[in-house]
Length: 125
Picture 1: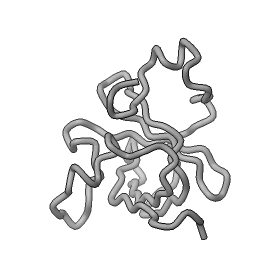
Picture 2: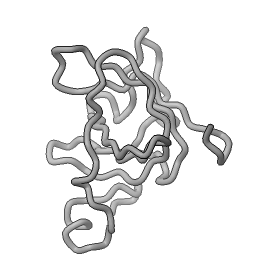
Picture 3: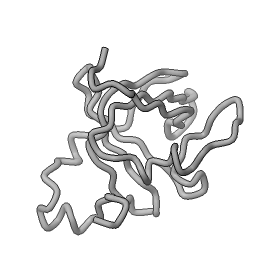
């Protein structure tokens, strides 16, 4: 794990992290949609991206990819200034209550995160 609390591949191989990443899937919804849940962990992907694992309130296990060219932040539409210190998943603590606004077109290979909202209360509704 690095200083930001992001796990590396070796952390999983050594058993430091007791999470089965195979249980987590990328969302397959098309269009604009919302995911509400709790962050499980973040780890470095093979291409320098950060993978965020989320347990949803519906019981789904989802993963999302964030890239360095966006400083590991969302890609808002309409375009707005992103506060990296507050919005980057690089600094997001595990077990954070979170809402992700996501978008995927029918011909897209992956889902884009349009906004990240952190809950200020400990309960989900």
